[in-house]
Every structure is written in structure tokens, then in C-alpha cells.
Length: 211
Image (tube, rainbow, N blue to C red; front, top):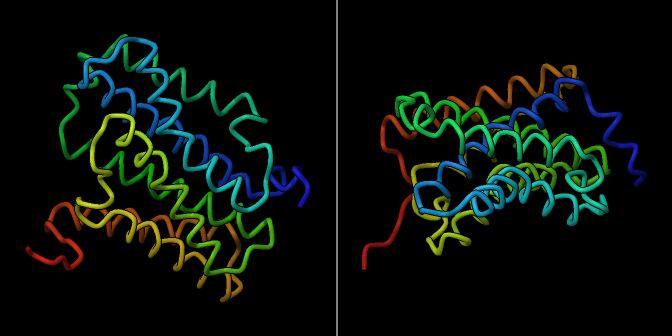
């Protein structure tokens, strides 16, 4: 598939991609600061958290080189968000917990929808496209946790990857119903966002085995 597929994505989806990049870069920078890393470490985790999921998705669907390398706006957005967080971290850390949860859910929704849409642009089968959307949403956080020598949050926290997958599937269902791509992306994003926020609020988790 040609690299011009990025340009054919709905404008809202491209905006969602940049929005998710900014939000997740702030999360990565915040985690790096809490772990005591220096400015370089903050920049590395900002980039990894914001863009690793998209890099993995692009390599899996054959969109090489990945958009985050081919398009300078992605790393610029991630590094800008990381630098802002580093400089104004005392204000970032004062943001109330519920607001941070909402921002994280928003970033997850934005990435899941953008990742699914891009996979569809590359003629990936619908269900696999939903999986690629999920990878886009959770891949960066997984790499961040590995860098920090932690068990990835998606394997132990409230419903997270499941919310991304549910939103992607709703988006696909809306597309099957012949709704406009922008409307489908909004519907899927809302489902992902609401499910994630409610899961944190109600402490929902998938079943697990107690040793």
C-alpha cells in the first residue's frame, strides 16, 4: 500500500492521532519524572509512550517507514509535550486524578480509532484492524513500563486494552452500517472513553486466577 494512505484518512482521524500523541507523551514524561530520570530520559519516554504503539502497528500492516519517522510532526509533538511537562512538572502533577484518568481515556480512544482507521486504509481485515487499533492505543504504555522495569499496566490494571478493542469494534460496526467514517470514529471513541472511565470508577477488571 502506498504511503499516501495517511493523506486519505479522515481529517478528524489525523487530528485524533496528534491529540493522542500529545496526551500520551505527557503521560510518558510524567512517569519518567516520577522515576527520577533526567531530561534525556524524559524525552525518550515521551517519544516511546506516544509513538511506539503506532510504530508497531505500521510495521505490522506494512506501512514502512512508520509515520512517526516519516512525518516530523509526530516526534515534534511528542518532544514538545515532554519538554512542557519537564519544565512545568509542578503544575502537571497538581492536575486532579479524575482529570488525568479522563485524559488517559481520551488518548486511548483517539489512538484506538486512528489506528483502526489506518489499518483499514491498508486493506487489513476488519477484526485484525481492530486489533491494530488496540495495539496503537496500548503499545506505547507497554514499552514505557518495560523501560521502567515494571509489569505493563495493561496486564494488571482496570479494563484498558479491552476498552480500546470494544471501541474499535463499535467503529467497525458503524462502518458496516454505512455511517460516515467521522461519525463511526466518534461513536467508537465515545464507547472506548466511557468504558475506560467507568471501569476505573467501578473498579472493573477481567477475571483472573488467584494462586
